[in-house]
Length: 233
Length: 352
Image (cartoon, rainbow over all chains, first blue to last red; front, side, top):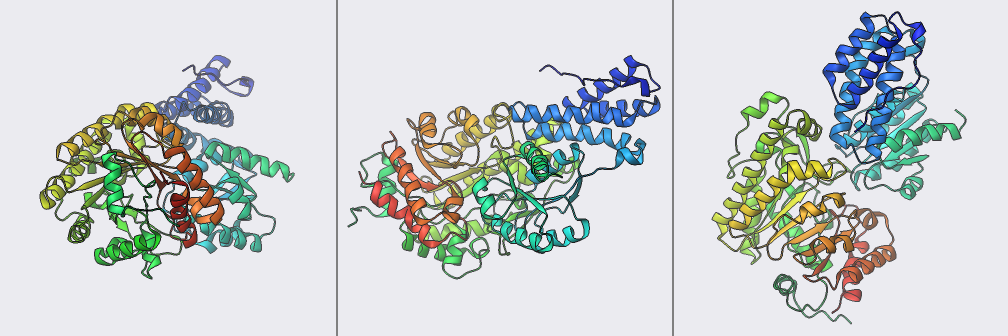
């Protein structure tokens, strides 16, 4: 597999020289794609120690790599094990770099409440969707698995998230979805709801009153962004 | 008027022998629905062998499918190795789930030992159920997970995924224990009921391509799966019903290398087309499937009937036989008439 690199380098803002910035950013990119947590940690620390802009390193190194990982997943080159390990490397790097972001850089303008619905303890799909949202810069409020029907609306009343994402793996538990959506829309008629999970289809999602549907984690973030774009948000 | 001539038992025996059938057999992957059907809580199907058996016998009689009652659950292996499962108790639950995993950290793997098959987890209840099967002139059956699924129920499947790449020794250790355990369980059933009497079901949902790649399947799962089936068949088991759950299309060339008996029964999910399954298994095994549980739960009776009709038309002339079956467990909230539509479709479309 050819590991491509980040594209544009804005090295003037950094204390380190252009070549070093390129080297560190490319290193972070490669560390995520190659699932190398140690490299992600060491290179992120080097970014901090050498005064390279943390925001730049995150967007052009770590999250750019996760976009590539998404492509590899969609293309059937990466599966869940690789996705999990790439995200481990991503989060390792973010743990080091995030404290060095400015308040403005750390701020995210989109938020999502996410959870696996009541009666369902299968959360691997939900966790993959969470990774994709976080990688795309969303603030994620993860309610976990087997989340009781009223909890989503209660959380939305507090958070006023841009979106609520619901997951279900079982035919039986997906029946909780229309009840969750009904409660959410009653609480906040403007809330947008995205659903996904093995037993669902786009038709079922629509019949449940959901605003969007996604087949997998990579589709979920694309669909979420498209949904908000359609609403002009 | 129905043209059905054989009893369910006769039809299944004929199917396995490869003799001419009166109609396509109808197998049901059905558990919690049976409990609801006779007014019991869904958990009864897993917690009370007598009531479970009774509920399944009554439901089989009512809906006319050909498969016998069985005791099994997809999270098999977790509590047998020391974890904890939770029985279904809520409005939206239908199967046991892992509440606490036996392996929480790497060190826990070293401490794992092979469970005592006489006392571990749900096995005593499964044995009680099988004794009821034997008393009622049915083949005692034992339902277990495949090695990858059992391993994923011992730890969390995400952990197994990570270890499969980063710590393969740990993944192999879990797969070894899972394989050896399942062989021991089947041996226990054979010792209890005698050679040639026991039937085996193996369910493998976690090794699907929704989680792992076909390369990972081939390298990591296939050797254990082949070993498991070879050892089970060597114990005198004639037929393995293997439910390859979920998206398994890219794994099919590997599954075709796994011995299932002569013939075995391959149960496919909605993700695998019947034609595709027949290409891979049709010459050697009976193919069963692939009616989508969601259609049973949310479809109209006409939709269920038509989907079943199309499935039967595709499968009924399979070289070693075809059986109409759900692609996974019948949802507990399935409208009863939809289940009846499966029976009606076998009678209307499945006559030979």
